[in-house]
Image (cartoon, rainbow, N blue to C red):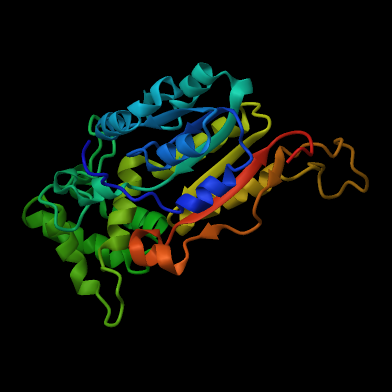
Length: 314
């Protein structure tokens, strides 16, 4: 067995969110290298887990890691928005008791230089699915100044997005930007003294989100969950930046709304029963100092959980 390449974030918090699950099926929408899945299968001897991932390397590694659980584990390749239907069909919707999504890039993807996620990489890729047509190379070298500026503002919340986009446009006019290392270097002129964060961090985040349609994927899985008629099912989602967390927070809040009557209606006419369940925690769970020290990448992680159900059992 290879060395485990990925430390799952918020592991104890995630296990705690599924503590009430006694049997049935848990769908891990972002299998990765199987850290959360292994912990869940170990903690709950009567569950089956279906893991989804679009990265074949992750599927292969997790399948070897989890083969000790036999037919209690099954992998499905595909992005988590589209493969969710297949997982539901395998599980049988009435049997699904948990859905987990860890919306982040795994440590191995970040650390493997041939994947192009890291600042020192000699390639410019950033695709989670290496068969996908769009890579960071196309985004950086072919997007217009306006389009680059847009993704920097929207996906990176970079205040100097306009100037950063111009920096890229000027550089690629001389020659194509071919490596992540070259791209990261362009951001160094925006470095501010005293800040520990690498000046290319938010730029890489924005490009990665664009390449992998990460926010679209997140909205897609939330749509699937919302429309799947799940009952007595816990949904736990780990996010790593404010854009993702905002989407999850707002969607969970929508799911708690009972009355959907227009605001001008004096008395409820809709039945006051349109909620889909309840929040398990009003505020997100975050890493403690010990975990942040052991795994610095956990410092921005937030876990929100929602119980999907139509009664008051939870």
